Image 1 (cartoon, one colour):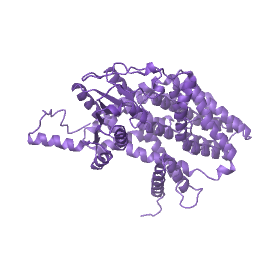
Image 2 (cartoon, rainbow, N blue to C red):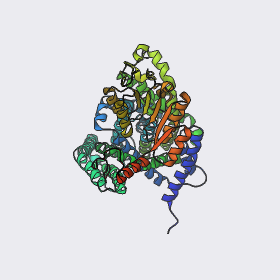
Image 3 (tube, one colour):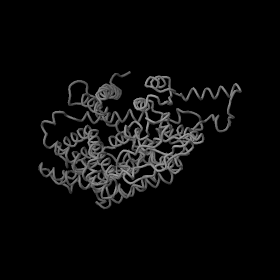
Image 4 (cartoon, rainbow, N blue to C red):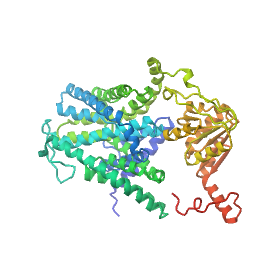
Length: 599
């Protein structure tokens, strides 16, 4: 067996060091991705010691981008995408134009050509897919309106960059560069004889053809494949089918239609979301998605030369200002101009205040076409790493600025607008809080309920618990962060608090001091543990009931103060034993409850 194994060495070194430095970063309450970037710098060619294979790391990182966009597509329907087109399309285009002009201005100051300035500005205008999605996922904003706007904005930016990547080789000679010579035929390579408008037309036709194929063929084929594999009863095959569809559609989209890998994976996930098995597909792809997204940050760190911070200090600061300040101000003004709330404008501005993978691709292409000097590539890389490092801090600054800006704008909701309507104080009465202007911009109002149950999460488990509480005429409220679920609960007259219960303001709005019990129906034991600690601090007498998937999670939650922890596997076993021994207390429908091929 050969001992020269660069792929294995790259994976082991990347993941191993990422774990070590990610754990250290987490210990000091720094986002783990900072540790992943440091790990990349240490295994890169610009620091002494072991040097990983950069080309392999980049390809592994691309798989992470594919799986991440696929996961977002699973939670982002076509209806959601179309619902934000009015802001996402013009907003992304205007922001790209503004950032490009700022890049051209800095290039002019540095003495570069117009072509170099255009490539440089375009590279600074597009946000990183991985960073933006990771930020939204950590704050559980993917399924909110703000999250849909940010993701829709990102999709428009990706489409614009796909068009730029196709046009640049054809326009290189006109812009003062060297036309690219292809060594092999590619469906993405269009002859320069097509002319500029011919290249644009063919590119748009390819993208349109891909969308049509996915909507017409993919909508029928992909769900059918999932259901067929699910009914084989093999979890291994189901997991493999999910990964094969995600990677296969992304690769096919790039090779056949010239669409980016990330965009192809997003559409694959969006089509798959229409299947009843989409939740299971998301769960099966999650471990690989997390692992490969870590390798993305490692690959970015490998490209960074720490000495450039000294040799290009002022240009790097100017580049960083364009990314963090220029783009953010443009996005903020655009969102406010479309009459969205200050909270939405700030969140989108913070999400877009960084650059990433498309910027690297554009920089490499620009250098290869002799359009962009190598200094430009170094500035883009330094700007990307520094903006990624600063992005979590930008979110903290945004949270700090939001109340001040709202006060200056006079948009804070009056006290009388933040009062719940019809609080449930009698058994059997379920309150509702009406949607109020400005509610999204500040902490939610505190419920008037007392002696109630706080139900965290309203998924498959939480909805059953909620139905039982309602039937038993027990007052309760639900803390949930999914817009569709919240809308349905409000229509049903159930009082809700929108957001993540791990957030102090959100949890406080549920009045834990006056609550009788806390029911944690969410599957994440670590997040549940934080909520248990918060509940115990607010009300030592509250009865805490939680769910778990393993003995370790049971011990973890009980150690933090949970009174009762129910493990799903044990309850399933108990139900089976009752049926087998004939001691079942509730009639069992063999069709609906004993299914040899569970979905």
